[in-house]
Image (tube, rainbow, N blue to C red; front, side, top):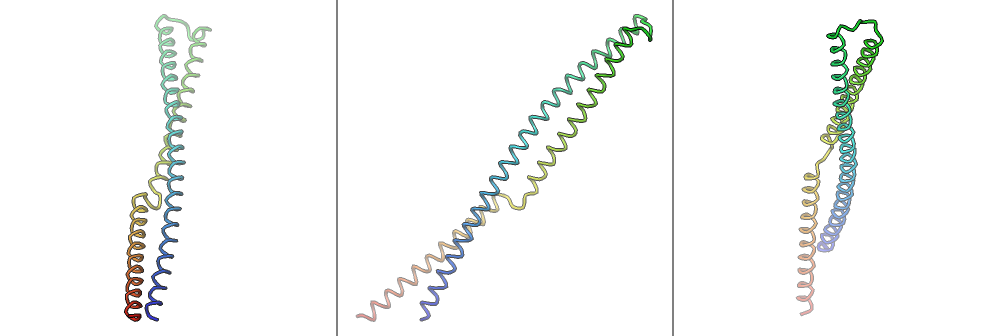
Length: 164
């Protein structure tokens, strides 16, 4: 009968909606896992960046100390070829290289951190959109189930009328 066909359609569509809801929930769980992984990577990278910036600050302090030592030797008139001046200049060059290495590390870590941030910002769907889609599917399912109840109640009333 027509009621049976409508009833079958409503139940089939409700089952489809349930499947879609489950898929959305799985997608949302996957997005949450990916977001948590990305957040952990960003936190780790940020901690690593903090350590690199501290190392850079330390190296810069040592470099300033070495420059002050060379300048002090120059103002005292120590000869350029003397052992003390050569040692101070070598130390200055070592710290300059250390500062350059630290600056390169900081730049690399900042680039990696920004890349992680961009990757997270470019995710295909946001959590809010997924929740809205899930809510819409839930509302559709509820409406369908209300229609099914209505069809069943009407069918029951019709059957009761026939038996009277």
